[in-house]
Amino acid sequence: MRPEKKYLVEEVGSKLKDSEYVFLTNYSRITVAETAELRSKLKDQEAEFHVVKNSILNQATKELEMPDVSEYLEGPVAIVSGGRNPSEVAKILKKFYKDKEKVEIKGGALGDRLLNADEVDQLSKLPSLDALRAQLMGLLNQPAQQCVMVLNAVPQNLLNVLKAQSEKDAA
Image 1 (cartoon, rainbow, N blue to C red):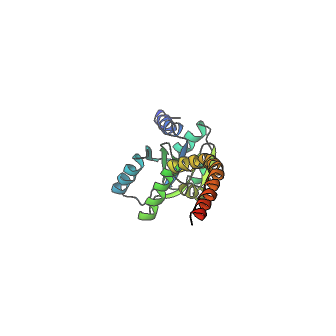
Image 2 (image 1 turned 180 degrees about the vertical axis):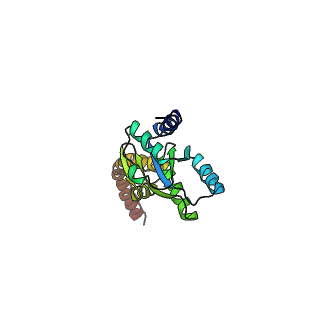
Image 3 (image 1 turned 60 degrees about the vertical axis):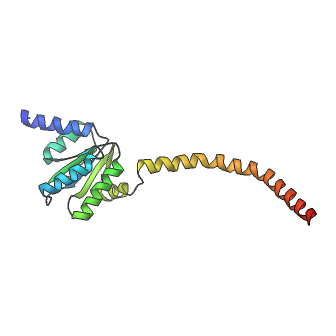
């Protein structure tokens, strides 16, 4: 392999290695201004958008023993990787595609699992990480709340009976 090509494979490999996911998109109709806008939105999630050659990406995924993404490497391909929240990044890509009708998601990989475009779409529909944490805390807190309500019911009912009796006696 030529040194230039090896350098590019290593560069793409470093982007992939630092991320637990990669989304592959078609960027053929996107303008420079739209690319800058998308990169700005992705930067908020610490994700990056890079245009890469298909052969370089294919070689980098093989060297890193990632899932085989070669079925998505037709036509112009850009990768989106980085960040800690793949769901939020997928939401940004989906919204950008819906608004501009550009940057079509071809597929991707999450960990050691290959994702098709529909699975990436499903990933974008997941609640945010903060919302999931709040739901988990609510689930963990619910049994304790119910226990307190049950324990409080007996004295409350006794108090209601005594109050009703005192009102009856007063009348």
